Amino acid sequence: MIRIETHQTESHLTFRIAGKLCGASVRALEDCWKAAHLSPPALEEAVDLSDVSSIDKAGWCLLRHMHRDGVRFSAKGLAGQTVLDELTGKDELPCKEERR
Image (cartoon, rainbow, N blue to C red):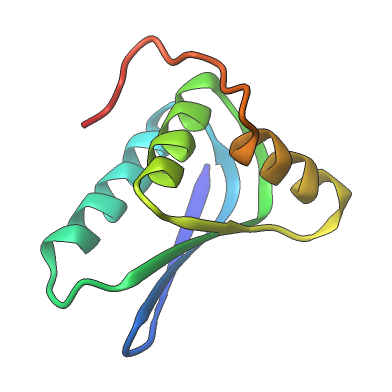
């Protein structure tokens, strides 16, 4: 199960994710992110991963795709920092399916 909260200001849109970023939850986050791209004006996007409890391979692929598209990430605590280090590291694991 996942909870996706959105917080919007004049220039920023932040997705706050809580729960497991696995299975159908990955698609839910992707749908929210894509919908944000369709709504003008273009906003700086961020994702807060502080309350994510686990991430499957599809979740990692989506997060890497979002990172390549300029989305900023934040997380609290040691586990959160480990996720950020893995996500923004140069040695990315290949994804079977590249998202567009």
